[in-house]
Amino acid sequence: MRSPVLILSLFLFGCDFKNNAMYSKKLILDNAWSYHEPITFTASFETLEENELLDFFLLLRKNDSYPFENLFLIVTINDAKTTFTQDTLEYLMADKNGQLLGTGYGSQKTSKLVLQQQFQSFFQGPLHVQIRHAMRHMDEENPISSLPGITSIELLIQKANQP
Image (cartoon, rainbow, N blue to C red; front, side, top):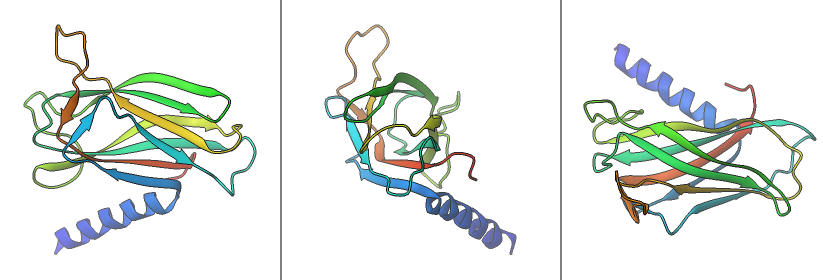
């Protein structure tokens, strides 16, 4: 009887997190992420107060065909006039034994990745978040053209300091 309660609690927590999102958009990929096609999200906010702090999260869903222990992303956040941040971020995707990290059952796991926290909302107009993978094989200069095992990417933006 404990299992249904635990599953229900996890489900409700997950829903609460998404319900607190000021922006949420999910893109489904065909089991691969092309380096040549960066993912861009455009978020507009109607109820944003001046200088309000925002947190940016990425929910990245992957499967057993993801071949690496880590993931490098190049993330750019800008409005029409200003680039606020451009950074290369590294995330751990699997343990030393190759087991995928994240939540989920079976061969599919979702990782909640922090892109930016405490982002001050002094931008004007829509906010653009561009994400590109920066994965490459060792001793190779060029990035992997098609990164296998990535099935969806979702951007969540919420007010800072919320559960």
